[in-house]
Image (cartoon, rainbow, N blue to C red):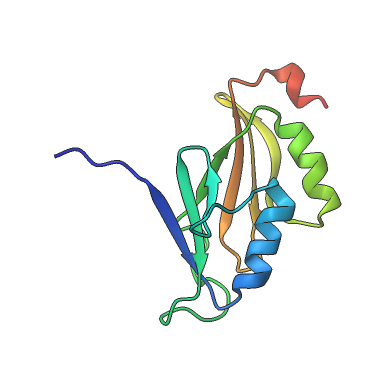
Length: 121
């Protein structure tokens, strides 16, 4: 039996701030069910009775966002005052940077196949 990921849920005691952050950081818009559509996967941010305060293990689950222009997004994120965990840098597979959302969850932005020239921005 094959399965595919249709949605992810981030439990938070800070839902409004989290949703505002994802809207501002990534231009994400919510669908009729209240989820952000990030490609084929829906991202829900909802209150959860087992969650309070910031995440205790931010690297346990990391959201990887594939983007066409990491440098452009990096510039936008700088205007939003995000907290970088790992500044954008070149790896053999492309450009990658890691930031933390308001609850401390890690979100990585990845531009696959980016060349060293793209890194010089």
